[in-house]
Image (cartoon, rainbow, N blue to C red):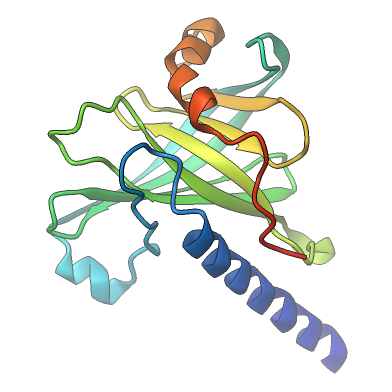
Length: 196
């Protein structure tokens, strides 16, 4: 039993280290000067922020190929936390399970209000949940549009497959695909090797 507890602790430490390495190495995929992602606020930092909102989004999602053609549809729930640290930008953290046994988290920084960007991009990571936790994190790039309440994700799986998700039950996948074309153009062809 003691060995199993040590394995879980080691796995948790590996996940924290993987997130730290990803945040340091992948400073986002937005144009201009990259902005490092921040950690989710603690109770101490929440007191220092000017506002914090946490919402749960029930979302319609679709896996699409590199032409925007739907391969599969699903539903997912995302927890969206947004906070202001008083520096003129909103910080966010989005967590969701996709596929069902994978926990994903994407922290990032929204552009300044004067910036002319429709959405923000960042790097994120995922890992298997439960008893069969993976020893390596899954990398992905993530584009979030808080105003339209939708996102796109490109997982480092060697395939040109994207996850599109929208809070709108009537979301048009073709319109979402067109909306995120800048994201598609920004994502590098190959993910950097961070782990292993």
